[in-house]
Image 1 (tube, rainbow, N blue to C red):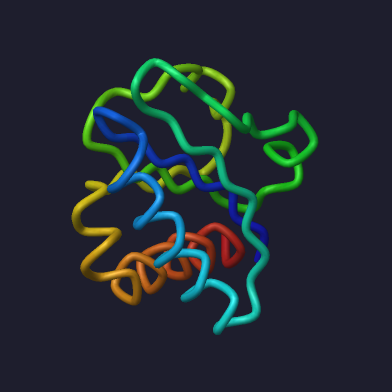
Image 2: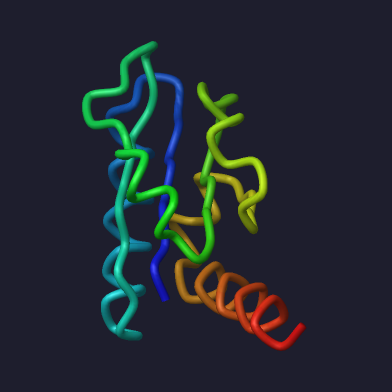
Length: 107
């Protein structure tokens, strides 16, 4: 499964990075590929490329504050979670992402 992850917190320093690290580690354990965009402090240092969004099977948005550019993900299956939960329970988030993906695939 290919995942596009967007994380967002107030400063874009601690929680965004911790959530991205935790979810990427869990995704890789399960054999998934993940592209990451971290937002916060009104900065987006690395933005997802249009082809990364297009190729993604699912979008995960782990946020503490509203993300910018959410319209890029319309028509994509999206899982919205809190950035704090992503840091603390990455396995649970990945379980939900896989469930969403499997429900789409089985339609």
